[in-house]
Amino acid sequence: MAEKKKKRGLLFCVCLGTCPSFKDTNEYEVLNAIRREKLVDWVGIHPQLCSTDGDEYLKTLLSDSNVDELYVAGCDPVMQKKMFRDAFDAAGFDRDKHIGIEVRNMKTEEVIETIKKAIQERDR
Ligand code: SF4
Image (cartoon, rainbow, N blue to C red; front, side, top):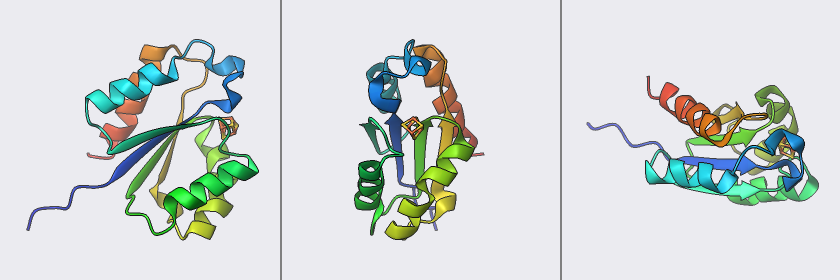
């Protein structure tokens, strides 16, 4: 039987849009590059996923969802795991389906390549 295609989503957390760590990154260009290559099923952008309304956003997005892999480009993946844990648990979303990608202090092209690599690594 053919293997079911994984449902993949990509969120870019832009750290309020004012964080110097993202000053060399055009987040829209990044998301469009990933969309053009159809590497994920959907993309989204959020200004602060580690805030209270960020928790609400994750809960709403992931409750009863069919998401197999949730990529979050932003800060350190270990920090992400800690910050999103409660929202994932409240949504009934398996924490292991979250793949954090560190993209701070990179230029746009570098961010695109880093995200592509993270997604492609899961296919190996
Ligand atoms: S989740 Fe990370 S990237 Fe997003 S606002 Fe919080 S610290 Fe910044």
